Length: 626
Image (cartoon, rainbow, N blue to C red; front, side, top):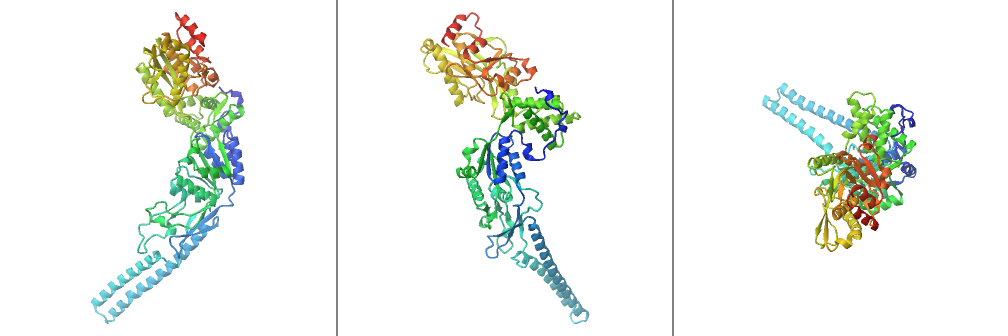
């Protein structure tokens, strides 16, 4: 746990949240320095790292560092020479609205003049027949016919004047304001993550009324894209590798030329015939993604970023120091302020959050920087405190929130353990030959939860198999791990078994999920050795660890989550690699429920996990060869 005397606040309400976005970014000092340089020199940046580590916040921070002097308004005008090439006019920030307002006033004045003429004609058309009828110069029938004719004439004149406004009226032209920066106080930050071609590059809408002069003018159908709206600011695209190659190529063109026209993106649309003059696209690109994004990026696009900017790998963790622990407290205060609904946290509640941060880092001496996930825990704890009417969030709320804010992987793992215990797949008592409680994790690199993985081995007469036969939907790495185990088994038992026995190993109940990774290596080795020697395995033991061909136990990932799975299953002992022992992050109450045995060799594993009583001779024979 974090020591209380490290902090001199009682609640996070006392922590001042920086107004500057760059100062709100936690644990990414190198990346912050890069974006400051990028803002000053207008460089592009590629951010690679895990989700939820602050990549979008870095982009927003860069936008705040840019000046607003480059902001302009962009208007579209009809082209009398070629209606499919709308004219583009770039004016100073704020002048676009003035030009549109002025044009509308002129159009309104023109309309009023037309209305006056119509009224005069209507009056004349009505008064003259009435005068002639009144003086007896025309009959009643002729007067009625004249009035009907006058009404039809007025209606026709009104329709003609209004349709005339739509049919290439050149007397007054009202431009379309495409980009309006009048009220922008800073450079724009446009998030184009997941945008399709039209949203990214701009589009021209389809016009169903293309004939008879009734269609909408081309300049009024233009729609700007993210590359146009981010002019003078920042264009942020997360998972940029998901953009199709054409969009990436056009994005590169916009970056190089700093200008790009608007055209229809669908070939079946009438908008595809329209191609405007160039609009400015002088933006800074902040591209983001994970490591696999690089493989899907257009080579020329990445080359442009690398040649005219920076590539940054965003940190997943930061050192567990007093200064950085206070940054986590600052992060909690920031989340409370952003949420605007949950109460502030007490110092003790913050300490539980920091402990959870240390645990989620999975490495000794580190704190996680996957702060989006940690923010979910903060909000869940705040919701609990609010629901129960507390003024501040307490440690009990955070602990309860950890149950509510479980990932899907954790919920699946809990169901897995519950079902396996129900049907006695997971055994926690007694001794059995060839059966071991291995440990594994469910989920991805960012979200995983531990599970108990029972493994059974059997030795049969035959000697026809040159390798150990392993079943249970094993992946590539898992199969390679079994081969490493095979080397150890054959080295120490080869003379006795290669002509007599075949060895089969099964990962129980993995048909739907499969097995990947090598963290079950020591469990597989223990299971096989138990089956060969007929020495039973203690079922109150579980284990995890990779195994070298020389018999050394190597470090694995997710050790804390695996131990928690063993605790949940009711197992009393767990074997972990000695090199991982410092990575174990458990609460005191959890440590009281299980005994952790750090091991460094397969000999230590066998000594602890197998019941050698009455089999001492076999043990000595095996350990001599090691």
